[in-house]
Image 1 (cartoon, rainbow, N blue to C red):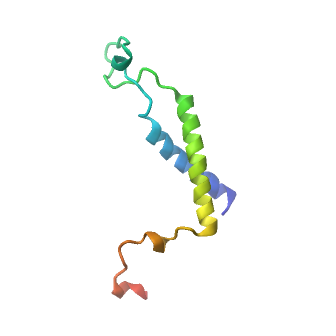
Image 2 (spheres, rainbow, N blue to C red; image 1 turned 90 degrees about the vertical axis):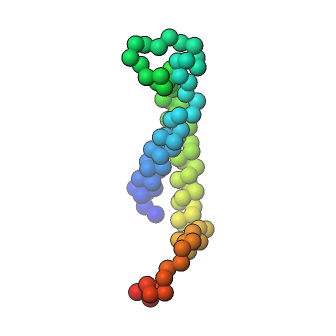
Image 3 (cartoon, rainbow, N blue to C red; image 1 turned 90 degrees about the horizontal axis):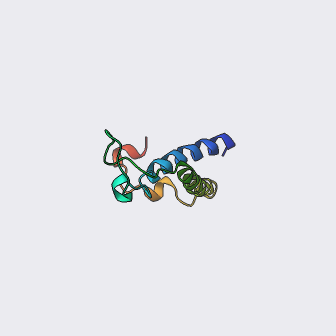
Length: 94
């Protein structure tokens, strides 16, 4: 696998992890007992820490990318392993 492909896969997984991790560990103003600013949404975070999100997403993305590359090289899980719907007979030999 080419290094640019690995970087591209890492970035895709990183963005997915970052969006997945966004709601975890964030508290609203009501939960922290802070006063809200006029016009602020009730669900707006009061303690958003972007660097913590970046570090967590980077670690998880690195582990998942390493597993992806290892699976690519060793072939642990292939398409045949996860194909739960068999191909109809009329399309098998094409």
